Image 1 (cartoon, rainbow, N blue to C red):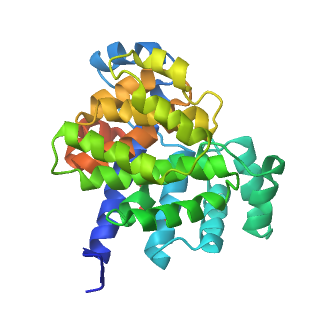
Image 2: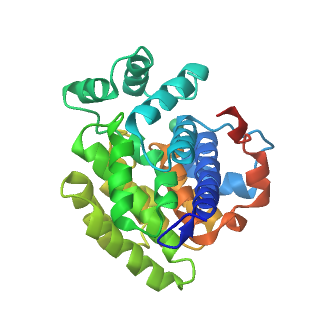
Length: 306
Ligand SMILES: [Mg+2]
């Protein structure tokens, strides 16, 4: 059996699917509770609604990355651009942002991905869209951080050419891969390892500066206060989103439900914030950490559609 650094092809695919479970439950949960987010805990305690909890563009694009990894064994930018454009054309109403719609329409019309991505906003997008979908890359190459950086960068640049858009994706992919490598470690040690990996691999810039601020921030703060200090994704850029997400994931590293509830409480880009936290936590804790009721309520992930 082909095995790179000890992980078999089957193990990579299985871990990527596991991360997709956490990511998509987070996405759907965050989307559902975005309105009235400040009361999310009370509302969940009263009982979560029956499904389906619809997932959004975060999951649609993460499924696209998973498909590319299955087909090519790594990120092939042209293939990934084609898959993203095809999925967008099939389901344009998943909540894609305006710039994403524009780039994906161009790629779908035959414009080379480099041209479409580079021209967005004049210098490339620094939106949080490359970070929100990158979980499967962190899973696929989980034991090889250097490879995670390379593949996450490639996956980002298909639509997010700007260095900050790329840095957000690298930080989240590294966090997911590190989280998996902490699965047998106690919480405190796990937190230290994940922090060290993120700082060791995130390129310099606003995302990284924000991350340093996030890692220095008191985990006992209320999520809304942390969101005010770090940004909660309301500007939908990577620097405004990823530091808060990492802060929120690290303070609830061993409780999937609690982590999602607290993450959403701060408002902002609720579905995207919760998608990233869900991906990170499930990489450490496994699918069993997702409340069964939540997982069965989430709209099905149709791997057969690929
Ligand atoms: Mg979304």
